[in-house]
Image 1 (cartoon, rainbow, N blue to C red):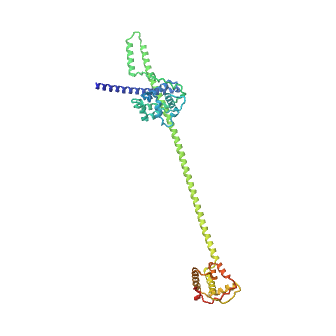
Image 2 (cartoon, rainbow, N blue to C red; image 1 turned 90 degrees about the horizontal axis):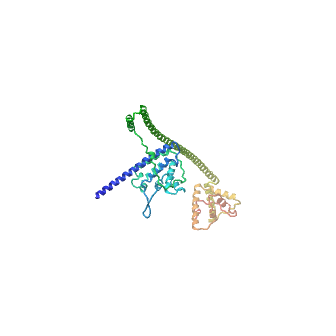
Amino acid sequence: MASLNLGFNGARKKAAACIRAVERRNLITVCRFSVKTLIDRSCFETIDDTSAEFINFVSILEHILSHRLKGQVSWFGYESPRSFWDYIRIACSKVPHSCIHSIENMENVRSSRAKGRAWMRVALMEKRLSEYISAALRDFKTTRRFYEEGAVVLGEEAGLLADTLIGLNAIDFSFCLKGEGLDESCPVIIDYTPYLKFTQTSDSISSDEEEMRTLGSSGSEAGTPESHMAASLMADQSTWYSKSKRLEQKYRVVLEQKGYLEELVRLREAQLSESVSQNKSLLQRLTDTEISHKLEKEQLEIIILELQDQLTVMKNHDLRSRQELTSHLTNQWPSPGALDSNAVALDTLLYRKRTAPWEEKSFQSLEQLSADMSISQMSLEPAQLNTHSLESKAGLTHWHREGKEDTPSLRGLCGSLTSMASYKSLASLKSSEYLASPTTDMTSPGLTPS
């Protein structure tokens, strides 16, 4: 019994799967037929909301998108019906420049079903319906969340659906989205009658002709050869008429495809030309930028060279100024040998006045004192003068360190012995003082300070 139940369940599941496959195949086939009839009708008139072919097409597409759509479970566990707009709104949200946000903000379209129908019309006017369907089918996780097993969008036929809808991009649609007719709650019905046309094959036609010929020959004797010829001509005429209609339909389809491909080629050429122009403009900007950088670099190099030249000129001018100042100061002062000789002579005279009574001698003027000092200098040799100068300087330094009181001879040494001011200050002593004649030898022991 259990095996019978298992077999019965398996057969039922298999039958259900077959039924779903037939449903999917029927919906995809009738969708292809509706797209072809819509393309044929667009060759003669503009497609709008009142076109029967368009009404049938949107009904088929709504059936496809609603096939085995899961319901929305409420808090109490009840499952309420759901519209395909809930799926499209989430699955197509990442499409660039999509119309989803605009449909959501429409004030005159409130229900979910009406928003889904408005989305179909807007996508057809934008010629992006196939793009939206392809983007939704690529989001497999969202599709699995909204649809049950066996749905058209989860089967192998989903790819055929997206490819079939590409042909609608060649049609210029014009719709009114004021909300009238979009909020109808009645279920949409597909009209299959335009697609249920029987086409007789050539074998069937030949067999029918043979049957008609047999019936004519065995029929009433009133029949004439002319009537049989007329019947055969009518059959041939109907056959050729059906063939011409099929060829005309194929020609229209090929013509529409040709127009769509030409439009696509023009669009790609326009995009290519725009890309080439942008590339040229970018290259021109890059070239201008490189030229400006080169000019700026050259200007900076010129400025650096000018600054270096100015710095060199300023250095040369400063060196020349230093040399001129040094030569000017050197020419202004007497030689060090003469200053040392004069200082030694004055120091000798002042020291003799301090240590021993000098010979009283009066000088009526500074010229006589200078003459006497020159005589003393001539009596000294240069080597002795230099030696005595060094010894006298060392002795004066020694006296100053021992803290001896300042004397008129030391008072004169407060300044530099090499300066003319000190020399003149020593020569400008009071003329009333009596100085002795320097008869003592400079190298005698009396000249060395104790």
